[in-house]
Amino acid sequence: MSRGIGEFAPIQDLIPDWAAVLVGLVTQLGDVWFLALLVGVVYWFHARRRDDAAVTVGLSLTGLALITILKHVFELPRPGQPLVALEALPGLVQPLYEATAMASGYGFPSGHALMTTIVYVSLAKRLSIGTARQRLLAAAAVVAVVSLSRIALGVHYLVDIVAGIAIGLAFLFVAERLLARTSTDGATVALAMAVVASVIALLVSSVDPDAVLLVGASLGSFAGWQLVCLGRAVAAADRPSHAVRPLVSRGTLAAGAIVPLIAVLDSAQLLSVPAASAALGLAMAAFVAAPVLYGSERTGRVWTALTFWATMTALGLRSLRRSSTWRRGFAVGRRCAGHARRWLRAQSLD
Image (cartoon, rainbow, N blue to C red; front, side, top):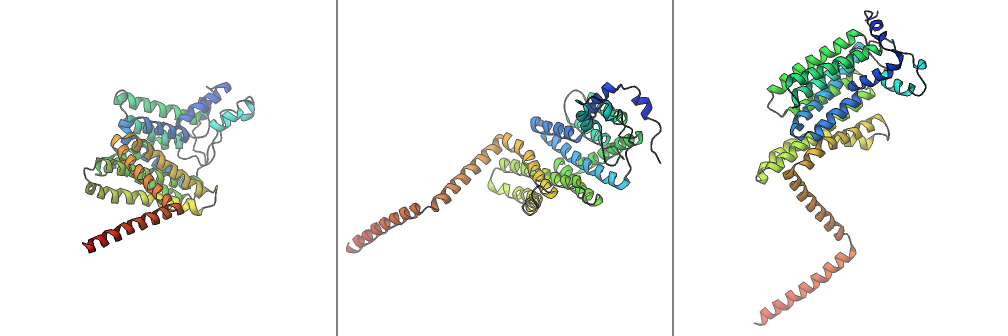
């Protein structure tokens, strides 16, 4: 039984064949790679809003897990009503159209509609560009354009789009209320939600490869943010005793997320999906932690000192491994012992 209501013909008839590739490019505004790039750029280069960007990272990862769960629960097919046949396009643009305008897998709900709703509305709520009204209108426009492009390309029914937007808004409503009521920093809560949701997605999807990668990305992002919070706490501590509690709490959380990734990477076969997931997780941890730990002046001084003493310790250990060091040490010891014996003898004569 089809979910359609005859929505394809009125939209597809308005778009000439030559514009099909343009529609495929427009739909990339809601593709995972573009949304990840957008959120990553905001996180790295919008330092004053980095905590808010970290919340968006967590919400985005949770949204991806939510899509995986729902698609495998409903298992509804796509419509299969392409905007234009691939063979009808010039050979030069066929690979581009195939990469941007075609989709596989289950069709309900629309992942593009759900993810554009979560990411753009979340950014509109947290960024400071223009007014709040202008940002929300811009987010709504992007969601609408991407959603229409999915219908025009024939990869989603209208009901898939409506459900994706509705689920995205409902998720944001619940998540924002939870973030407002918790005493923990919002990024930690959002990233913890991503870890839990990705594990559920892994179970529901019967260990789908995308879900495996999502677990790694969520664990790595959570661990990276704990390192960020740990670095901030250490840099802000007036005395060493004030850094003990964050070292224990944040350090334990970070280790609890990183250790499984390292264990999987060490035991899994090279180029396997679990190994790729672990590598992705470690890369995400570095991606999340690097700009904050590098950009903070006080944290930078702490890490500079730690690097100095770690380097000095490594050089000392390397020197101890050399036989020449032991020979010099033995010679110095003999001279010191000789001096001590002569001093003691002189004292006894007196």
